[in-house]
Length: 132
Image (cartoon, rainbow, N blue to C red; front, side, top):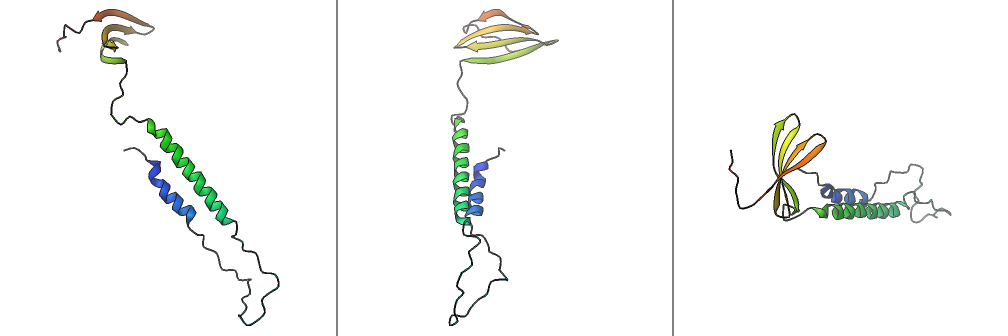
């Protein structure tokens, strides 16, 4: 199972977009409507929180778009078609291998050992090999 961070994006946006709960200020005096109001009203301590929320949502949306753009390289068709491929490998022991490699429709038998790769034979498509 692969981790999909885009599934968490709506929850993160909801957390930033939710209005913050403001604590009750015990020093604030509440005046009745008929009485005179104070000359200088107190500034709201959460006034700048709206800009922070919008900025946070923009940053999260940008990060989500970037992750979506980076993950679009996944091939929908399944297997990626390449011109060079290793078709089969057999170990001969002591870090030595026989390898059947194909390149643009042609097959080659290679001998691989530490520090060296040798072309042993060019294989033709007409003669199928027997499986043992």
